[in-house]
Length: 122
Image 1 (cartoon, rainbow, N blue to C red):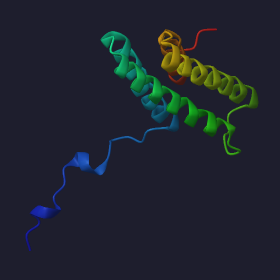
Image 2 (cartoon, rainbow, N blue to C red):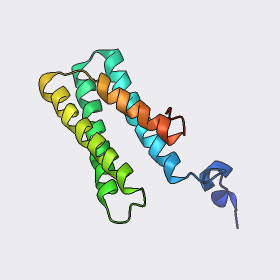
Image 3 (spheres, rainbow, N blue to C red):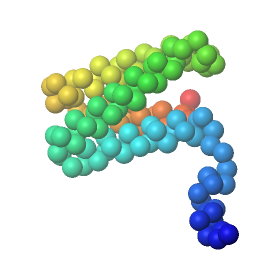
């Protein structure tokens, strides 16, 4: 029997460490933030629309997770983050409809990324 078809590289078995939920959240927010920054840098309206739509999808998913009964975050933090999600989605609609600036969306996402990394300033 030829064992060649069964050989796998080490990378095919997953990473060397397990990502935490926080790591995964950071990766998703980071990916969308890069899309937003690329949209600003490109000046292309269609790139801006796609990035803003991705950001709205992100914040809609985060708000749904925050509102779910199984979310273990403290109630006040959940309320604050849901409020931030609502603002981000509302502003995203302004970007899409009125060509408003993406800058507030970038700032919010960057602050969230810093919070996920424990880089919050008091």
